[in-house]
Image 1 (cartoon, helix red, strand yellow):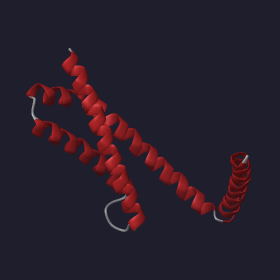
Image 2 (cartoon, one colour):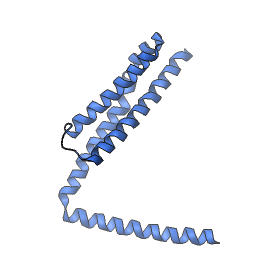
Image 3 (cartoon, one colour):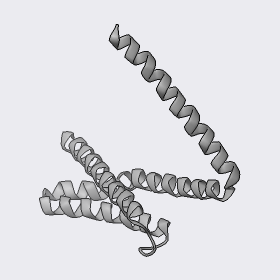
Image 4 (cartoon, helix red, strand yellow):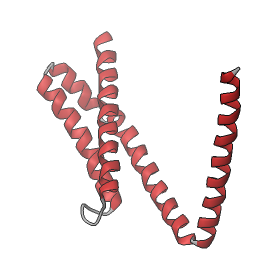
Length: 134
């Protein structure tokens, strides 16, 4: 019974928060249209970067094949560092360089770099397993 009451009240509170937040966002962007333009530019750059991050390890499959044939941990580490470096350089180019950014921007970039590195590792690991099955 208490669980049902908690879910009911929680749903009502969450709905109220979402309605007030949505109305606040509409009012804010109605009064500040330049902020909406800035958000869309940022979203565009983020989507471009994510697309490049998703594509780079698959496009460089021939390097993974070569590294697997060498059976070298150093080669594998250099491959992952190289792929992550490409992702980082693309992100830095998209944000317009290294200077003039606040701590939040750098925190988001570092989290993005770590996520991209983990993705590169998983893709290279998958490709290596597929090559070893042959």
